[in-house]
Image (cartoon, rainbow, N blue to C red; front, side, top):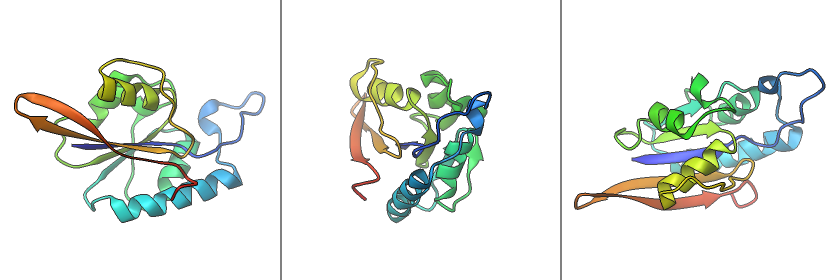
Length: 153
């Protein structure tokens, strides 16, 4: 299974009294999202499931793909690793799954899958970590397929 973790692009800081879920992308964030989406669209298989946090900034980032997106409440900024893995059906899903979400959950998930421990790893804004599971004998292995940022695509 391929699990692609995409952190939302740069967003405005919350204004006083603003709900965190309502924060929008900055103009720079919009450019980042388009640039990374163009790269992803060249790489992703047509059948990739796209799951996004309900936060406005994640929705805007995912929309740059111009693909069908499923909003998953369990991917909100306060998500857990367990909720993310459950939503993606890791590692049993037959199709690649792209998650558009937030820190720290994306970094914690990458750390757990790659190192076996929950650690505070950072996924940069608009960054993508592409993980691939494979079976070797009776062992499930996770391989880091790609890491890209908006400046590298």
